[in-house]
Amino acid sequence: MAIKKTVGTLLYEQVIDTIREMIINGQFHKGDLLPSEKKLMDLTGVSRITVREALKALAEMGIIETRKGKGSFVTVDAMDLSPDQNTSRKQKAYQERFFASEQARLIVEPEMARLAARNADKADIAAMEDILSSKKRSRNAGDLDEFHMAIAKAAGNPLLVEFIEHLLELESEGVSIFRLTLPEKQKRESHVLAEQHQRIFEAIKNKDEEFAYFYMKEHTCYLLRSYEE
Image (cartoon, rainbow, N blue to C red; front, side):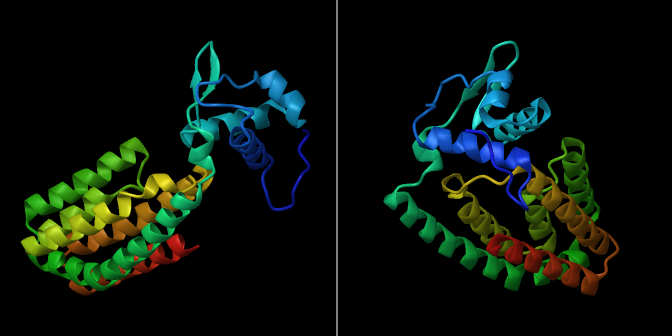
């Protein structure tokens, strides 16, 4: 089962795909202990560093759980990684709902940011700043629904708060039926999103309505393109 190097794909990603396929094919089941690092090295023909990278990524993706002194255990079923026809229909329905939500946000959120720049008080600014700071500390800057909700509240229209909250719920309720994103891509996306959110915040804090509108539109367009890809 030695891995053949594929151009354009990192070696540890190929190890990830191999282990995923082994779970899908029934070689490993939920709760099973994966082979040791040494055995995985022998099976795949890669270095210990590559195996460790792959195991770390699989743990971050929620596919395995590594327990100190015991090894790595599978935490998903084959069906979680290999969707059946019914799940495929759910995926399609969720995709349609998700992109409809993103398009609605593209229309509404830039103007919402403009209103927030006009109406935000000191408490609103402090709330946004606290959210951004806490996300930086947790190194999870990509997940900033709270920040968008804080902007909606700062805009001063309670219907906007309900509307954005509803859209965010629609987008999050079907995430589990999709294949998980590799941590490297999540980190890259998080870095970009963190910068975009910071620009939006600074514009709102400085009462700059036009830049608040522009940066939010830039951000929502970026999200839509990323999700389409």
